[in-house]
Image (cartoon, rainbow over all chains, first blue to last red; front, side, top):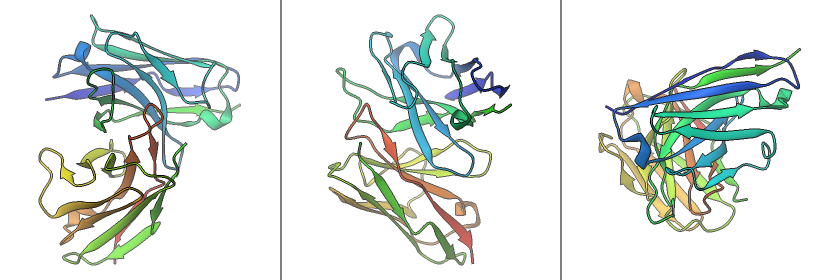
Length: 123
Length: 108
């Protein structure tokens, strides 16, 4: 059974840093592209970042570009999100989510999601 | 960026009744539209993709329709476990995937 488990969330002061992790199991992690998606309290879902299976292609939402860094370790079946220069508006539950891509195109939904980890940015 | 607008924000329905949720895209997304269900404290679950194809294990009471800019999710006879928040997502404009703000389906 496919499973994604996030960790690393917590309370951090504005301007601080945090590193999120997502542990994958039940599928061949190295063959799937992955994403981070966040959900601010009481709000909708916002796509944050994408990384291809081989790490050759990475994308970020404009709202986090230059502050967040996505990475993965296929040997450890893990996905990461390094978050720097955090702001109050980054407060959210962060989910990792799998996407099926083919031939470099990802016209696909996110078929599996983790339970999320809460990041709170506050002084 | 393609903006996804869902309506209504809240839908009050009695168990056993039909629920119809709408999602509108600010420009055509063809049939590259998905629907997700999210319950409190849980991860979103993929229900529908390609606007009308049920994901694995999704009951037949869930159906999707539409293309271009107008989409509908219908739950033919609401069960107790169906009361949740539903989100639409476009993936036509990847890598900028965008979601609607959600429709909460609550017990009437």
